[in-house]
Image (cartoon, rainbow, N blue to C red; front, side, top):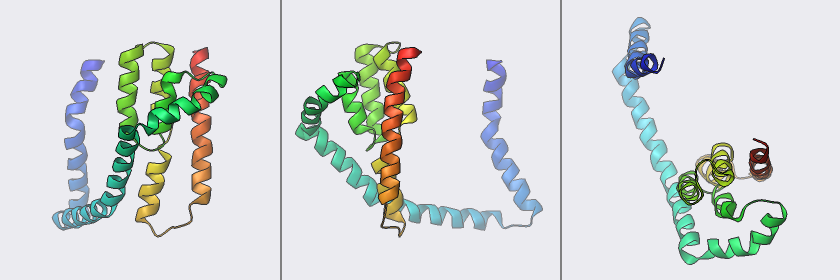
Length: 175
């Protein structure tokens, strides 16, 4: 079965590209011109998004480098302990709403320190897979669009994030 899937995967992207080209030819569309217009639009979007991405990464680096993350961990430790959330997950819980790639790095560190098949390792994997990067999404999407009032989006995102953190921790106890 894996050999069949491996063979299919070699032909998947070329197959999709071929289907798009054939469809465009059948509809008498200038495929090359459409591609160039799409590439121009993609570059414009990338340029518009770049300042927001840079700001987020600088903010994350400032938090970690300044020692603020360790400070927040020490302050929030008793609260997380009361909720039966392992202290090893505090930095991941604090960083995940801000950075997806940063939380992947933290998850790798957590798994290398505690093991992949441990309770903490499984919790970190589920958190990274289910928790949303709230601030990244808000900064990116609301920064690019003209929408300035994000009060409901932030509250909904925060509630969803808290629920997914708690669910990942408590469900791992039963799995």
